[in-house]
Amino acid sequence: MTTAALVLSGGASTRYGGYPKALLQVDGATAIERVCDRCLDRGFDPVVVVAGPHHGPIAHALRGRPVTVVAAERWHEGRTASMQAGLEAIPEDRDLLFWPIDHPFPGGRAIDRLLAARDADALAVWFIPTFEERGGHPVLWRALLRSELFALRSDAPIRSLIPEFGPQVGRVAVDDPGVVANVDTPEEFASALEAWRRREPD
Image (cartoon, rainbow, N blue to C red; front, side):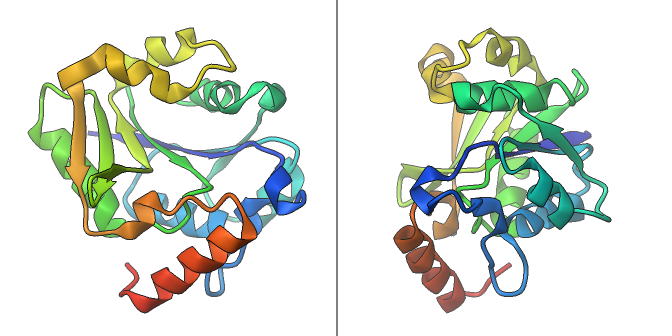
């Protein structure tokens, strides 16, 4: 089954003083390169990156990679507006890995666990990785969620759809604290980077 990836980097990084989180360095690579390479290594097709005010630098960082960089013209309306801009570039029949760039540390094994859970569970449509019972990112969506995602208001949280699907939301336990490492501030990024270096990266 062909699966697409949508990497979300549409915000202004205001809590970072305007410096794009996509360009933070993770041991020799930018966060956006690291995330996209994990997707490309697993054959996701297409790999779409959504960029807002930092479109130019992000596209430059990804030059030479088979990645589509979409400009989110309505990025200021919220994360959902940016997600919907990227979804426009993805074929309707593709399941989708949705990966916000403020979670740059998940490893490949966590992604493999999500894909395995999708293949084993015919009922679930939304797969959330969990670490120590906390939900994180990236998440995996079946293609049939597409209409629901487009129906959301541009300023509505994507997670507001979760209650609608009840038992069709699969929670997938992974041994990877990176899935819950949300790096909205420099302090959070420094802490998550140190933790990532202490464990075996994959």
